[in-house]
Amino acid sequence: MELVADVKTALLPIYVEILKRYRCHKENLALFGALYASHKILCFIHGCYKLMKFHLTICLFSKSTLKRRYGEWAVVTGATNGIGKAYAEELASFGINIILISRNREKLQMVSESINKTYGVKTSFIEVDFNKGREVFPAIREALKNVDVGILVNNAGVCYEYPMYETEVPEDRIWEIINVNVAATTMMVHLVLPGMLERKKGAIINVASVAARVIFPQFTIYAASKTYLDNLTEALHHEYASKGIFIQSLTPCFVATNMISPMCSFLQRKSIFVTLAKETAYQAVRTIGLTRRTSGSYSHSIQIYLATTLPEWLWLSAWNMACTAMSRDRSSKMK
Ligand SMILES: NC(=O)c1ccc[n+]([C@@H]2O[C@H](COP(=O)([O-])OP(=O)(O)OC[C@H]3O[C@@H](n4cnc5c(N)ncnc54)[C@H](OP(=O)(O)O)[C@@H]3O)[C@@H](O)[C@H]2O)c1
Image 1 (cartoon, rainbow, N blue to C red):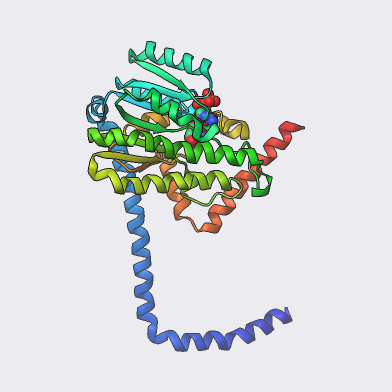
Image 2 (image 1 turned 45 degrees about the vertical axis):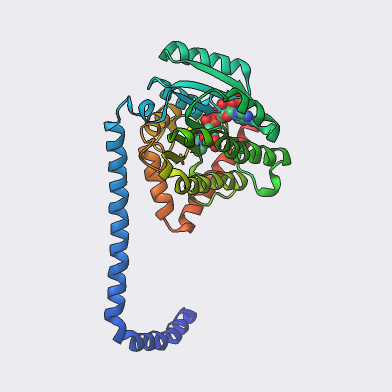
């Protein structure tokens, strides 16, 4: 108690001195406060406006738009599972022919046949392991030689199996992330863009992640690869939008797919935080040509708004809690 009284007595003169010095600046400080509050309110209104625009865009989207605007063929990488498969199906439902790219021939054949039967569009596939690096691209170039690619969905991607600190990530996984997430996306753009420029039309969707929008400790290298994609997309947009090419970054939060579901039981089903690949693709496809960056769903847009507006320490505490839950879930499964 004595210590508290001592601190109070010591601090009181300082407090009085500060009051004396800044009394004359009271009005300036009030103005500063009002400006800050107005800025926050305007940001909030802008966020609501963006959400309403997203909703209207999806409701008013016309089915014939995509094919007319970009062409008859779409290439989707990582199209045998999750978000890529859902994109391929959604685009096919618009009457667009699909070329699927992934590693596994049986899965490619199965998805290709199923899309062809369900939507009555032409389909084909290219069996490729992007992790092999530079050597696979001549074969892709050859396979796409006579195809007017209207839409490219650069979706193939790999992540960690669970949260890891940088030094714990196996070297093979680091190269896989660089080869699949970074190099393959860059090369696929490099491969299809000249054709699009000749035809003066085309759309490229690079599947990044919320990890490109906020700090993502324990998924550092994955997040850095997605930041690369988001930045690449933005810069490409500035280079080519005026030449008729639309380039979009998709930045979803958690989507229940094979990539993240094994991390934690919470990530295996739909919830306010987790969406399904089908609904993400449904909404995201309807923003092609309209928004340069989309999360692909309402709930993820709200999550990203909160994550980017909250003080960084609050976001980081929430994210660390999520990582701890994932690690705990993994340990209990291993027992
Ligand atoms: N799920 C999420 O919560 C989430 C959130 C944000 C962003 N994303 C991003 O969304 C994209 C799709 O993820 P997802 O969740 O749908 O994952 P997924 O279900 O694991 O699907 C990944 C796809 O990529 C293909 N693929 C993986 N490695 C490949 C390689 N070396 N070469 C060629 N194809 C390869 C896989 O096909 P094969 O196995 O047949 O080769 C599969 O079709 C990724 O870029 C991911 O980073 C996901």
